[in-house]
Length: 343
Image (cartoon, rainbow, N blue to C red; front, side):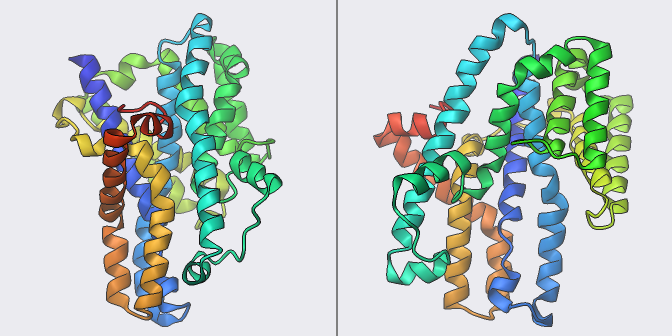
């Protein structure tokens, strides 16, 4: 029962983070209303939801991924973990990047869609294709998977520090200092290292606290962390103080996790489980719907607001519909595109 409740809590948080990610990419005030004062009200709402709540989604994803990877980790499990993540991350990463590239190439050659895509005529050649597949050129949201793949590849380095408490504290402190000083790493963002490492350390040294039942003390601890995180975000002056913003993005998801009692969460519904497929499909869908809406209903504030508010629901219906068709008629394709999830 404990394990089932823990997995259910993971799925709830993954689902909620996915909804927030959709809102992050659903901004449409300027698209419909331009940059004038007429867009100001809707833009403020979208900023609160997208740049406010939405900023905690990807850090949450990093932390969930790290926790699950390092949960019960030993050196003997490294090969099996790498093999599993190659199937669940690398394969769909390459496939989806290729699909997005071919989709943009096709759309850039169709009269009515060229203006909506807004990227001109995209070259169809091996060099551009390889760049698109490896570097997610036409699939911007997969920057997260790109970072995650590198972090998993660096497991021998990261775990060499995290396996002992003293060196783990040194690694976390160094990660925090790099964030504060805005040190640039090759391939990986310094904030991603901090999110990932903090959750990995929690999986190694604090599994009982992370997976245990909530109570008054745990709830208050989580509330304090969330409040401190919100304060950091508030004092970051709109993101100018990057260090405070990153610390806030770290503390709020951790605090909310502690506040949520896994025993009180109802079982997730089947349509809430395919979050990876929602993450992979939503970006093109959101842009297509918003840009098409702006062309058909320019200047319509109500249409823009409705699309923004209900875009997660629309994206869920779309991804669920496509996923259901693939599961039923093309199960090998579904397995590859979903990374083996819910096959």
